[in-house]
Length: 238
Image 1 (cartoon, rainbow, N blue to C red):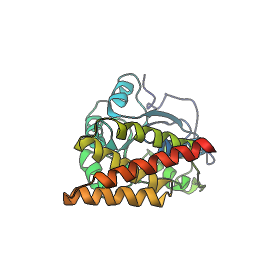
Image 2: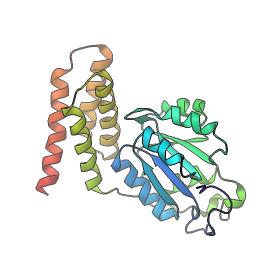
Image 3: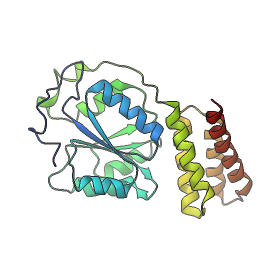
Image 4: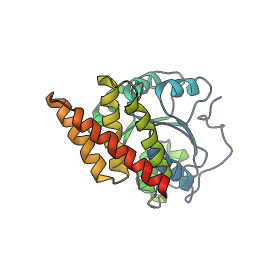
């Protein structure tokens, strides 16, 4: 099923809902980050589908063809750059492909893989989100041009942050080889920064720096696990 063609939806974009008629597939493992995008799609009139890993995204893309693809660069089963490269060379090609990351250096990697643009986390501005997509759409699919964009700031559901903490707690209680620990660290750095959880973000950054230096990280990893558990218990109390 192709959601990206000119006849995929009879809905016409308006200045209030400039992405009406667009279907956006978000490949993102953080529920908190995805909830921010869900709210932006709601403000913009776009439909949203979500995949939380490369495997799920590929399964989805065998059935549906969105008009916009947003891919997080760090996923639990590999690099988002791999999916971007695959979809860049797919026929027919998805109209707009965007990389997504809280690490600005990932923009270069996303572009090299074939992405048309890049979204920087944390995503809070609806205007930034809309403009990043609209400027890549054909002119006849922009409602009155880019001047139609109106800004709002979104606040993701705190329960989505708790879901992310539960996810990473499961990761940390399982076998933690180097790849798994690296994934957990980059996930926590990104999610905690998005949620303005400075204590957890700094702890994850310190652990990442220690791993880069090759110094022992047992105590730091235990502290990270404790901070994650603390946030889970705090939400349960609420």
